[in-house]
Image 1 (cartoon, rainbow, N blue to C red):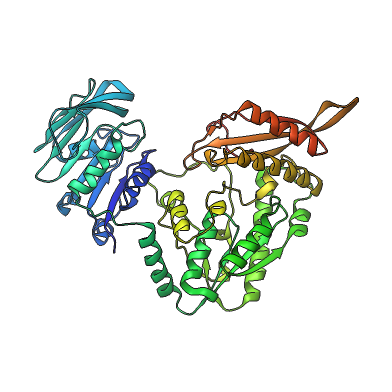
Image 2 (image 1 turned 90 degrees about the horizontal axis):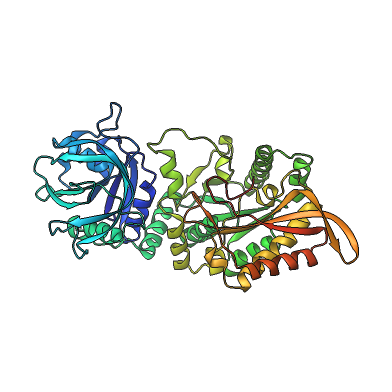
Length: 511
């Protein structure tokens, strides 16, 4: 079993980022809510604990607290922001409202050489996000760093290996954040850092073999990164016991079905069944323009066709899914129920009566880690670096009702857009690029004739995980070239616009 660091989540917006930064050091970590039973932590036998930030202050009446017995584990702790308050609260320190908020960049002055700050400049930029201040030192602690507004910005109890910092090392704005986390992991927790894609592949193959035995597995293959990596990994473990089902919903991009068939049948020799469901999906969507209803219709037809195909295989006992770690974290998160922005569908929506056990080989991984595992499995770069594509496909990139004519227009425009950004070497700089067919017509002139035709919106964003996104500042000459090509080559389009809204307030997809 690999070494583990546990992160206890107090509701910070940065908790997932802490986990990603630790994983980047080839150290395995898991995120749990702050009030997880102590036995769960004990069973994991962690090499260290990180206490995350959070939106509350430790002195507030309903502030989340941990069981004091946690400190009997005698392993290193790192408290970040609110986590510093947790350490102070348990060791008779006094955290108060400073009367002056400190959000954004601050200068950290290291006042005592420390294992936590080893090989870090004496004065460097750190990122603050708080309105509290540690007024008095907790018992047994010493000050190792300060800022102009926080005289006690970093502390340690070297005997008990307890460390607390008021700033966020996990964000890119903290100049030596990665080094601080590395020092905590390697100098204080003494981990080896041997959790690599190759190790993950080997462990996963063994685990899948143990879980599945000689039974059959089915997997819904979309051709996206997650389902592709899951399919190849499971196939490597159990070979012909796996059957992949690809459902062509008629809402795919140009050449998508053919690419999936050639890649997985020819390159990886997977058992692949392709279901042509285009007519059923379009018939079910006819006349529907409400985006949420469209998603539900697409999801329901998908489930119906998948279930029918799965039953025709016969004898399958397991259903494989490309569930990722952010989904797992979200399901057990400290942060209470959140507003549903829009619903999604995947094979996870299949009815209980199928009575299949789940195989989720990627549930420990973040998206960037899935790509590294995919590279280890020799999956082509074109699949691993592919931009995200929604389950409902082009059905939610046509604003309003969906029909074959609109889909054909959108496919042609989309192909031009994607081909051109690839040709000009910017595809990999963009997290997601897409085209949207708008429900308006506009007046135009082509030759000597007046036109009254459709409008295409182009959207390209940069992001880390899709939770937030900035619009991509595309070169104007390239935008002009793409616009001209779409208008000249796609009959029925006479205007192209570029979406320059970020997320928030806008979502990446328009529906």
